[in-house]
Length: 298
Ligand SMILES: [Zn+2]
Image 1 (cartoon, rainbow, N blue to C red):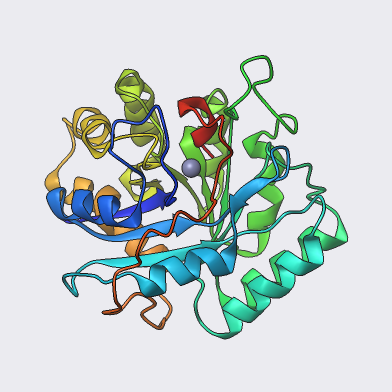
Image 2: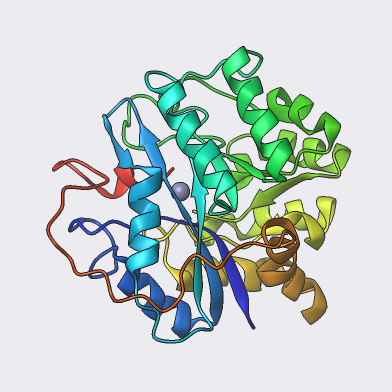
């Protein structure tokens, strides 16, 4: 069944602790072909606690320089920014990218960054998403990388974000907000424009996914992997098993239609046409030398 992956990361640097040989855009595309993934959203990353990340224009550069063997696969960009130290720099980039029609959405790293959700800076971002009709994606639940601290920049619960959807802002809350899935379910049920994604779920999360689907309906879940943290095999396993009692039409809703409606409803310029393949140049990247599996999720 054709799919859109709403949540993936790439880097050119070798990364330990993942099942793939590397986390490059090329490896990702091979997986996409294997698993009938038509489009993948790549997320810019900003981790001020580590001083690392993949910036907006860097990600755009990788996407643009990648030679897609087939015109049927496409990468889309969700930009992001650092609210803690470089807000205006990040905001200006997002504004420029939105003006150029290069953005499909904006990812907010709640619980990785200290963000005043009622402050002026966040309001400014909301105005931008409103102006360009962009969905907002939020990291939800446990953060990764520090075993002694499950929430690097503090807990943010689904109900604390609910006010953002008041005026019809489209929102995607990631990872079923574990361990706040019960609260997430209530919030999604109450708000027409709040969705969840299935990224970074393990095989053991089948029942949780099923519960979400039974309560909120298949029109509220988006398929995501969190590549390279989670494999396509496991991500698909979760959906297939959670949706055993659902129709093929419902599955298509989760794998494809919800994301298509959310991110492709606007006429957008194709940002990854037939460019030449981006050659690995050993550039420094996303994570520092101590990368591990735990460092990856966002
Ligand atoms: Zn992620």
